Length: 384
Image 1 (cartoon, helix red, strand yellow):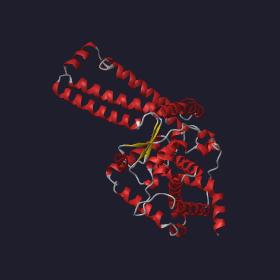
Image 2 (spheres, helix red, strand yellow):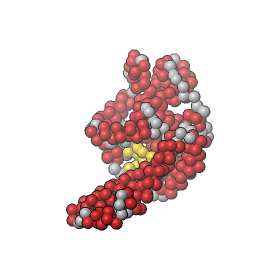
Image 3 (tube, one colour):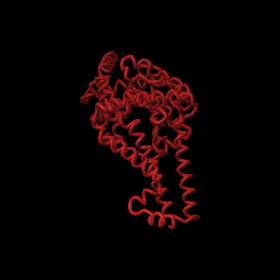
Image 4 (cartoon, helix red, strand yellow):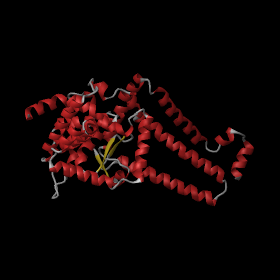
């Protein structure tokens, strides 16, 4: 306590506290100001569009190109380094608290250091990703109408994707038990060119031709219910390589959509389906159609239970095996850790005015129905 008392004797009030760690106090104030400005100005769409198009998109492109030369996920390495650094710092400070005097001052500096680091990361996140949520989204940029849909339209498109899922299910590799076992490495390599045929119609989806990256600690991702994530500080699309193969290609496409500036989860799901079907690769098409079918059928289940049951009864054995495997895989991770992770992530989505929370992943239904309804009617007409 001697150091603290000495400082207090020399300076009184806030000046004495500030003198304990002036640089950290100044940085904390700076980061807090950046976050406050973001909250105050994020309703200014013109500013958010300018920041996203002139700063964030070029930054992500540059980072993605630079990190494409790194053979592993730089994002995972940075996260691991951050975790180890924080734990190491806490251990050192704990030892010093026990072994040295001036405990109150040291405890205060430690708290300010952690607060400064946390605010610094969040401030960068606001600049490098948060602005996307308040800029023009996919629907605005594309001019695509994603209005309300009827139950009849929903049923038609659900039947269409169920049929496509059955069709592509026979074109992917399977193990002796008949479960999808797609080549993950081939899918990752293919990801570099996945958007080539989509950019022609939607030029704003243009982006660096770099592959998505598998995460070494994918099992940990499963425990927190994550199949992938885009890391704005490295520009990388990262995917869980332990999760079911039937989901893998669609997850890759989803994270690449984020890399190309599609921030909203429901829109990233739709763009993943769109890009995959445009490309035509069987692994991507099967995974994307399965993703679309699941979202559509979940919506149809609530709207028309009989139609849902009729469509589900028409799924092939191969598709049913993949759905069963997928359900069994994720049931093994239903723990308090997963629930806590989902709660935190839902809170994060709400903080950016994504009021549907995790349910926003199902909001891609309107986009799917509006975009594919005409194709579904033509397909079903031929089938009839």
